[in-house]
Length: 117
Image (cartoon, rainbow, N blue to C red; front, side):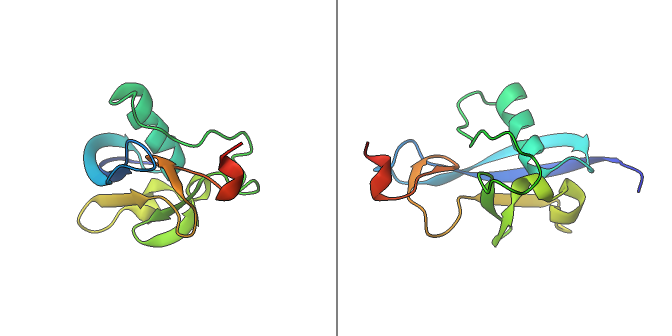
């Protein structure tokens, strides 16, 4: 499949720390629609907002599970979802932390009691 530059509005969940209230911040990108949602989030962090906290991992193969997020309400591995499949008809991709994990900051989550080491 040929990749195409697409305009995508990312609505990204932000939370300053585990005790703060969360909110959504919007980022508009024109990007190659074949890249993963995870890579698009890193583009946001590197080019638009260095304060965005993202999980960092090395596998990029859907094995480690570090990039687990809710993408448009569905729990998915962000490294395995291309922008073209996540992009709704409205041009929006909404990204939130996964269910069942405590939020430490933005899209970084912990594992519960084990975070307080």
